Length: 113
Length: 107
Image (cartoon, each protein chain N blue to C red):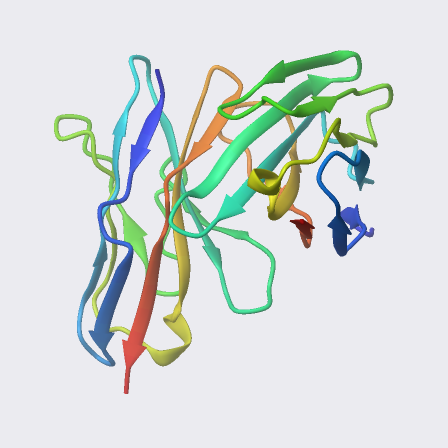
């Protein structure tokens, strides 16, 4: 099992550009989520999904879109990148249920100039 | 609303000394609490969860509903414990993390 994979590992964008961060898992997990990690701010939830076709907003959803057409994939789209979106992005997945362990991807380091 | 508070950004402890990382939460229902750890150049990983009532790598955490706390403790710190520690709360399908505490073990 590859677990949770994220691509790319690093990305530099110019302000106003759009891009998609990819996340995939091969553990048949229903629950998937995206977080951003910033110094002093910890991990903040952007969007999450409890299953294919279902997504919901987290703590900081503005400027980001998600979709969940399959159980395996949960891409995160930046519509018009801004310097405030410079961050490390983590995808995570788990079985649905409140006590379940989340498995994290390796992260994508995004810089917006 | 769900909220997790970790009051210390950085905690420096001498090797062999006791460690306590604080976590307080706010949640109107029955919470599920976790501690996750991120070692240098590694992925975030689960350290322990309150429902398991287990000790992992010498760490324990007890849920205190009266004080709404879930502090992480270890009686004797080891150098390999140096890492970033996050407290997390699961409720209503959202899993919210605190801001994290960097634990630095001094030799």
